[in-house]
Amino acid sequence: MQGSLECPSCGHHLSMYQVPDSSPGERIATKVATWVATWWFPTGILVAVALWGILNATARPFDPYPVVVLAWISAVLATVAALQGPLILLAQRRAAMSDRQRDEEAFRVAMNSEADLHRVAAEIDSMNSRMADLLNASGLGGGPAQR
Image (cartoon, rainbow, N blue to C red; front, side, top):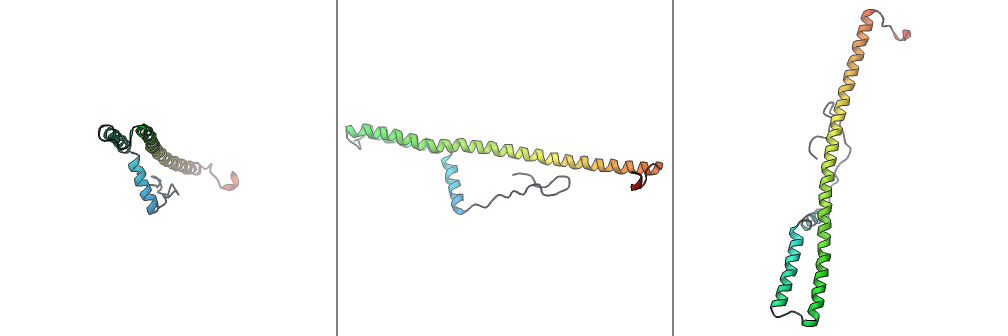
């Protein structure tokens, strides 16, 4: 998150949340998921299946006729299954980016609200001290017994 985690008015720490360190396996999994969650991966799968189909149809087939139909059906189903994961990851990554932006905006609003509260509290304290000074100067202000 950009910006500081301290109140702009008084400097106290605003958040106790600390991002946990990830293990090497988690970092590798994140990199793989990030790569799979791009449009290059599903496009590559579609191109590979299309090339296999064209090569199998035009060149000497890998499989004889009755089996090639089942191979095509199998290839289509495998392609659908292979595309589901990356497309789900794409949607999740987009949702996570949106959530992160919304959270950062909420944090900025909270920081500004806290700064405003500090200014209001300081103004009230200033007004209270001026009122006490005026009361003392006019002779109306007394000790705690007169309250």
